[in-house]
Length: 259
Ligand code: NAP
Image (cartoon, rainbow, N blue to C red; front, side, top):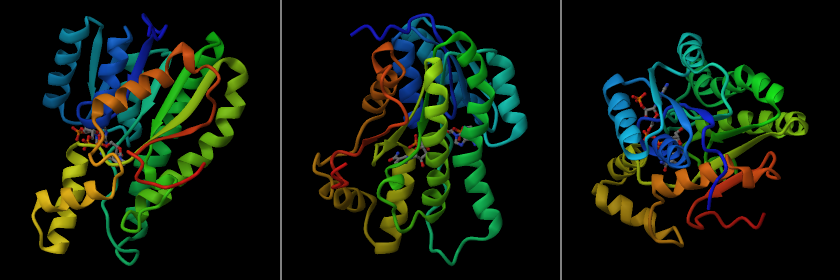
């Protein structure tokens, strides 16, 4: 299917690895030029080269912490006006409700709520002016089905979801669509780090922790960054013009939620 976005320009935040990289590659395969961000310059440069070599689009890497004002300014300066924004950042650590201080909450809110909101506030005006735009926020299945150990993530991402629910309706009349993409468990570094935590807590191996988790997923496997990226690219396509303010979950059927 031609996604109808060849020649468009996108910012992909936190995109050197994992789900962000999957989204960047899929958009590039659809012919979208990229401003690609992550903190670590080496992995970012390697991913930018891989994507350029595989697709022939232009990829401008910007090594910066997207949770800071300075980091966002660097990305936005390099990008100028864009048609597509994919927001993303690292996820907060798991723990107990007794573990977290005000500073921990502020950090989680900065990464998983306030950074995506700031990126939307910076990029939406030009999309509205041109009458076309797409925003996909990478959030989590924990928005729909909160995970006990991920209190920081549950809290911050719920705030972002609330912001999107209202804002998506405010910008839709201008041809700008905002939606959220909710990963269930996917095979990335983040999944390895979560499984390592479970393995340690239960005194089992990493492979056993992964097998236990797979057994709870009807698809009996983890999702892939490629599948995730393809869904993101569709949500940024001309074909998703009637999709407004949705929370699209990719979880292999793990959460038995009827709507
Ligand atoms: P990942 O494999 O660990 O990749 C994270 C990417 O984000 C890397 O490119 C990393 O590069 C970049 N990054 C992290 N913090 C950043 C920051 N402050 N500024 C700029 N770039 C940053 O993680 P993932 O699995 O793709 O997860 C992406 C998001 O989805 C996370 O918020 C995660 O919690 C959420 N999620 C993932 C899963 C899953 O199963 N994988 C499930 C639910 C939710 P640098 O470290 O070099 O900056």
